Every structure is written in C-alpha cells, then in structure tokens.
Image: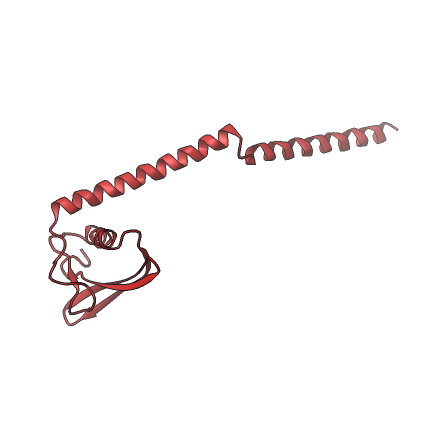
Length: 146
C-alpha cells in the first residue's frame, strides 16, 4: 500500500511541476511580461544606436571624400559612376550605398554583381525603388581589393 501512495504522490508532484513549468513558460512568452518588454526595448535601443553609428560613419565619409563623378549616370559600364579618394573596399562599398541612398531613398538591394572589363573593375547594383528596378554601375577599380 505504501508503494501505491508514493506512486500517487510522485505522479501528483510531476503533474504540479509540469503545470509550474507551463505557467513559467507562459509568463516568459507573455507580451505583457515587464522583463520581455524591457528586453524588447533594449534590442530596439541597440538597433537604433547601430543605425545612428552607421549614419554618422556615412556622413563623415560624405564630408571627407569626393565620391561621385557627376558626369556619369551609372547606367552602363561606359557610364559607370567612379568612386574617388577611397583607400579601402569597406569605405568604397559604404560610399556606393550612400550614393544609392541619396539618389534612390528607401531603395532595396536586389542583387550585386562584380564584373571586369579590360583593366577596370565594376560593381553592378540591381536595386528596387518605388516598384521600379534599376541597375547602377560603379567603377571600383581604385579601391577594389584594398
């Protein structure tokens, strides 16, 4: 008889623990849980901070580099936009995106290709902006691979 009682008590204890775990998980996943809300706000603050850092970096690059050859429109290889005064690939790519951001606000990058024509290297950015698709050609010979 004592084994039967112990077995019932064990089953009851297991059932209580399972209910506690279920309640704890429900609390953790509750959108009104203050801890969850604080975590969400923290993540949003980090994302906003990273966005500001990126914008500041791009703004500094914009001020310190003559980036755009305004003669070219970037519609073909022959008409590619030349990025000038850049000493490394990271800054060059950032300036390409800065240009796209200024000319096509709210653009989405659909595809990016690298191509060589003769002794020149090109980035071809296929973007979408306001439901229109564009290919923008950048001559990246000056900074490619640095």
